[in-house]
Length: 417
Image 1 (cartoon, one colour):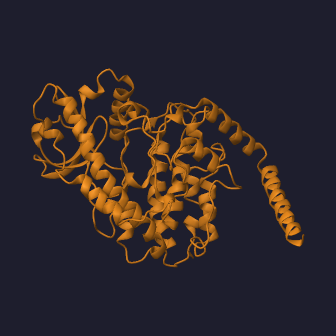
Image 2: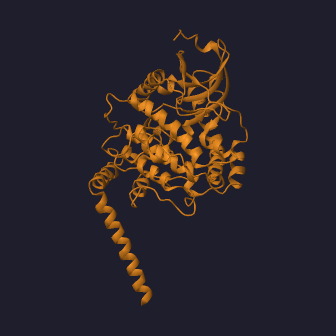
Image 3: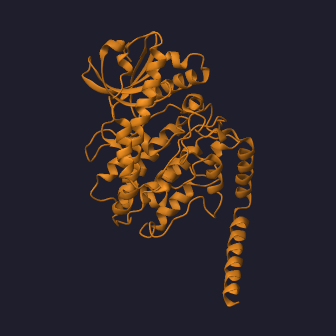
């Protein structure tokens, strides 16, 4: 790669997002006349944070190694006295779920086409011993607005490169609702955690609502072990969805990461390879959940974005009066807009998500971002459940069935009385 011309080669545009350490902005690269996305990180915010600095360099290393049509392309990186800049491909086609809502029809055929792209991206990074750790719809973007646009996996901010294929990570990170249960245990996690996330994404893709409704770590761990399977296929939402699709989800959502399939194996799954997929239009049901999620997220993000940019500006402007790099999208009535959208929105609780903050973001984002992640008791208890389930799966299922039968018999006896 040619030596970067640095910041002077870019004209910055609108802000696309913001976090605890910086912002992501659209920009035009003057030397190539190309639109790009630029992540701008404040060195002042990272100062003294060895963990976050390592994550930054890990992200740079990983992005430069990845060359795949379903992974966002690395373009450039440079630094100034007070900031780091990471330049990547700008995906303008929208997020996965937003794009689906705009379709005229959505069937299992369409869902499989999407899953194949996600699986190929994950298969590729896993072949390089890279674990993404934050697979979720917000990180799946279309390159452009055309019907044939490829889907790309983005945001490698908490991705990890393993020393070997079986290496484990012991520091929890991810997004609650999509994070795999073993990430929250004391046993460590690796590549299989991405497969779990694919299972959750598939569940939501086909139904329009979230697989898990818990808004805390403890609640999630209890929820995914409360029944025979980690998820429930509720009627009537799943009545028109094939058993093969449900089996695919259950295969990906194996509680035991050691028996969970690989991305390569899932690409050979009967549902993925079937030539006779159901063509029932799922969009009417799916769209209700997606629309509610999208409107709620848009409203909340306006406020979060402005608040985060304000904090970053205050931090940076302790030594600098102005900073065009951190200029946010102006929104003088952000709070009013949030209020208006909330008044016109009835959102089901199962579509609400509480983000599980990255370890490095907890102090700045607040104590409500799942401090219970550190609960050793919960982690150890769940680790034991997973081990027991792996060894005695059939016994547990038979026990649950016999319990259900006993309760049914008791209910019949009570009716007779």
